Length: 47
Image 1 (cartoon, one colour):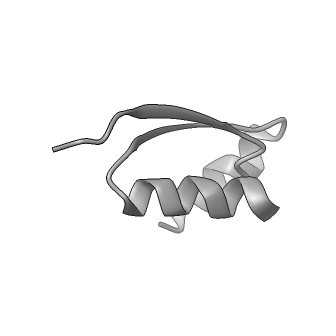
Image 2: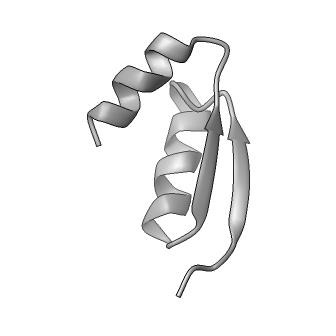
């Protein structure tokens, strides 16, 4: 069962990425936003 939905900004690197990853591990449905769509796509394809 999903905990809920959450939006994380700055999710392509640093603390934003760490938060998005941890929330996903805790079964939240995460919507990740980033200024760099390319960097975010690379991070998402690595998971």
